[in-house]
Every structure is written in C-alpha cells, then in structure tokens.
Image: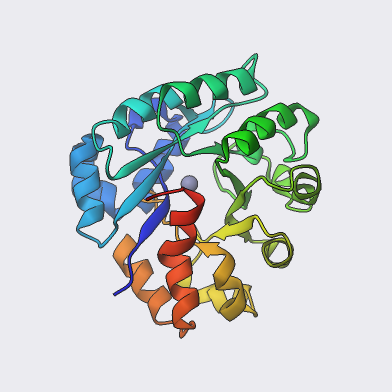
Length: 276
Ligand SMILES: [Zn+2]
C-alpha cells in the first residue's frame, strides 16, 4: 500500500465561516454529521485522518472576508501546533483586505512552520496574475514554499468564478519560474484542458485533485497516466461528500502506472512540502 499525504484539508471552525459556507459544509459532509464538534479538537481531527491511512495533512487558512469566512492563519498555526508531526499549516492572505499582504506572509513564515500559501481568487476577487500579488509570490519563491490556488467552479454564494481562469497562471509561470504552483480542483467545470497543459509544460506546476470526483479523472484528463506524475492528492476533508479513504480507493483502482500513483498520493507532496 502506498503512503498518502492529504494536500488539502480545512480545519473545523464553524464560528469563523460565513453562514452560507457553514451550511454548505454541513450539507455535503458525512464526516461533519458523524463527528460533529469533536472535529474542533486537532488530535481528534488528526486521528480521524490517520484512521483513513493518511500520513500527513495540509490544513488551510481561509481569509476570505467578502465571501466564505475568516479562518485566519494565526488560528491555523495554533491548531496545527498541537499535532506538529501530522498537521501542516498553510497561510492565507488577501490583497484586498490585508494592507501589506507580503509583509504579513513573511511574518507568518518567520513565526511558524508554515509550508505553503493558499490563495482564493474567486473568493477574494483578483486574478492570479494581479500585479499586487507579485510581492507575495516573491516571498513564496524565496522561501521555496508552494502556492495553492483555488482554480475551478464554486457554489458558495458571492464567489466570482471568472477570477480563477488558469490562463492567468501562465504569466506567473513566466515571471516566477522557480515558484511552485498547485492548482486546486484542476480547473473543475471549465478549464481541465488548460490546467492539464500547464501541469505538463511548466516544471513547477501541479494539480491537486481535491473536489473532483475521482472516478471521473480519466474523463477530465485524457492523458491521466502521464499527468498523474504532476498531481497531488487532496481531499477537501471534511468538506467532501465521501471519505478520504473512499476517494483513495477509487484512485488506486484507475489503473495508473505504479510510479505515477505513488507520485500522486505521496511523493510529489513530500517533495513540494520538503518533508524529511
Ligand atoms: Zn478546499
């Protein structure tokens, strides 16, 4: 059995989410219905993932005051610090509401073992090639931490999907050749082909398969056997309609080359996150 890193989970913080976001999570998540508020304990949260075969999990801050909520980086740092060998914090900054987002990110990196940055273009209302993001990308490239961007559809009220257009990331690839870019949801709904092109042709670009129906991956990406070498596994847990283990099971049954499967489930993430 290959090892598993989950590159995309969300902390359980109902009070920090916008009401519509929390309602959505409750609707789609059997894990929330099963475990409820016990998930707010990071030890319980980590154990629930360990029980599904996960070895390490990225936990995403989400500072999107205009739409989904304000799960600030400070709270995610404190939460992950209680399970430091398992939970990996990612920061979140917003160029529309944080006065100095690059300096803020730098301060987070200096203060805690942050391993990446999550950006939410359709929730925070900017394109991925917005010049105001460039100082933020500078910080990430210098610190050798990946940028994970929400790239694809969303049903959360108030989100503006056009901001996720992955063609904008081509500029980022040109201007930041050493920056590691991970496209969460792989262009879900409209842009599978653009995301596949970028992942195949840009050495530091990857697709995170969270939020995609794993049984449909071959429909979305005809060249999946090769493309899987540029993918990481993410679940969106606990905001997902199945379990992490069930999604991994389906991915294992897709008939991928053994090497590509290992890269998707573990090795790419381990390298990107610089895990020893
Ligand atoms: Zn997510």
